[in-house]
Amino acid sequence: MSTTASKVIKPDFGSRQKHFIFNEDHDRLRESIGRFVEKELAPHAEKWEETTFDDWVFTRMGELGFLGLSMPEEYGGQGGDYYSNLVLAEEMPKGNSGGLTMGVAVHTDMAMPPIHLLATEDQKQRYLKPAIAGEKILCLGITEPDAGSDVAGIKTRAVRDGDEFVINGSKTYITNGHRAHTIVLVVKTDPDAGYDGFSLFLVDMDSPGVIREKKLEKLGMHASDTALLAFQDVRVPAENLLGQEGKGFYHIMWELQGERLIGAAGCVAGAQRVFDKTLQYAFDREAFGRSIGHFQVIRHKFADMATKLEAARQLTYSTAWRFQNGEYPVREISMAKLFASRVGMEVIDECLQIHGGAGYMKEYGIERAWRDMRLNRIGAGTDEIMLEVIGKSYGL
Image (cartoon, rainbow, N blue to C red):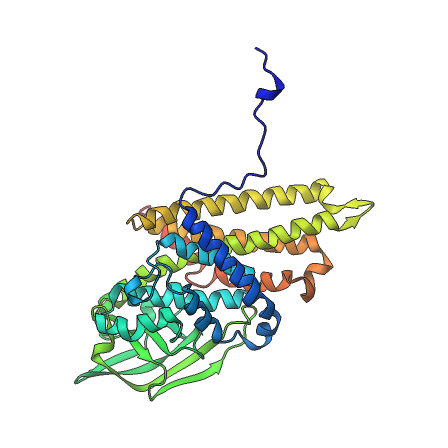
């Protein structure tokens, strides 16, 4: 059977067809956020690496409507879907600062969702609305010096005293901890009730007894502030209880699922950005009389990286579709978070290797991306915890 050359279907390697979860509204949002990040945030990346990013970022993003993309319009949000949050996570890496991306994500996708889901109307007016506007900065208090992956090991206590709770304890590794106006705080309200003994509180950071003890120094994410916090006889009105008393553990486990999926999207987008930058370098850099990208060993590195990135992206998107449509796919969210964070680190490490000595130098930005990406295999649930969740989901 013969066919004419005009009828032969040829590979379309240049196709930019979007994934089915995204529509034209998402495309316009992506363009808008991307332009803002590249024009107004990226130019400050070098300075913020030394000083942490400025608080005006939240104010400006609030003005542009980027802090409440999936939040109800009645509180100042855009009323969009979960995919809008993915778009934000994918565009923020254009700011060339993992710490900036992390600080914003803690506000929009870690601390804000529990307030939206669990808060009373009064709490939404006092905390959600100004957070969406960028007038109040949020942080999330889970990790403690002796309780990281083991959330059940939290020791910070809240004891009822009339119409108030008195809180004592400490939290560590708290992103936005030095700049935040409000913390969504996980505490133990009944030490004898097991998983039913935890509760969430909205705590104003200027309350007497809240001590921002130390700004922690880190391997990466330098542009974000990370705090060690102490709570010494902090009195919080009972009306600041978030959700049901005794159900805080389950509330925060739900919060972590959305956080992990957003983190997966951010890992893929961040690694893709470094991949693209390295691909251009492979065309430009010459060795032994030709560009290094034309050596088989380098070409195969890019083929391997591209395949893994695409696999991580598709796993993240398909899981996001299930999440948006009302499912609670904890196993697949854990898989996406585990795989994307591992792939992200592997890709950036390989990109650094392709750059050679230049990749180790600050001027190319690859070493910063390497340092920033490493946290993703620890934060929001370590690789080991994700493997445990996945394994147990099969009854093992």
